[in-house]
Length: 419
Image (tube, rainbow, N blue to C red):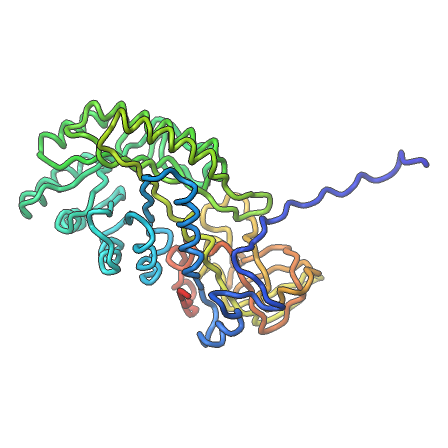
């Protein structure tokens, strides 16, 4: 047979990683033991975010089983500061990391132990530093400016401020969605300036406890995370020679990602756990008073949440189907592609009350806002949805409602519930 003119086979498009954390029963997605339709009816309105307690506990349990015993797991509550969720996480993890006095007070109100809290951020106000010292929270120092303010708070309160140094390292976390260390950064103190900062901490009589290094976030490459952890540890070890007291707290950051986009696969924890075991062994010899901390946000909560919006209109424009929903970028900026994406990609999306139907049409899922930026899914294959159906955006447990401009254009806000 002559095949010289045959067209090449079409390349398969990359698919989203399977979203198995929420099961389906017939047509219905099941969340917290009830169908999505039942939940929506009980709440009485859409849009809403829903987070499942069992999935939060499962993720922490799986992480503890994979990691060496003795690695401390902290929750970075900027990922999701819903009070009920923070209260749940307080009972699951070893500590809470906050990025403002507002987050600190919220965590304390939810039962967090101030001795197991740290406070980071490049622009802490004097009142915030005073409140942290008063509460007994560990302050991650990010500039020389903070030291006299902490010394004054220590004098006023009659207790030495607990401090760690946030180091801006001389390397970056390769393959990160967001790089937060290496090169010129607003975060932390440049590694080469840290010895001078440590000397000033000693001179002022502040209670030095350790180092905080956070090279980047949302990384799915285990080898990159392992390398960043090794470099972070070795940098902290070198700097410890200049410290006014032994290192007791070594926060190696996080960077653990979750799969959002087509072609991405879950992070392999095996190599990361092996590297942490190696570093833990070294710390036992080289910094014997130190415990190693992982600071994780989206990895702990991101996959435990859904964003749910209702289809208001199904319209066709020049052959393209648009599902217009009552939710959008004002509630879920990240899913719209306007929260750090360079090239917009779709989050995993489903029709939560048509889970047993095949994906038969290419649709745009859009919100009600008067801007073309209000896009939740673009040319996505979904079942044929109608008015009243429930659009579900997976991977929505982190950087959702609190990271979105809910006041934009005056549309109603959304609910958040923990089930």
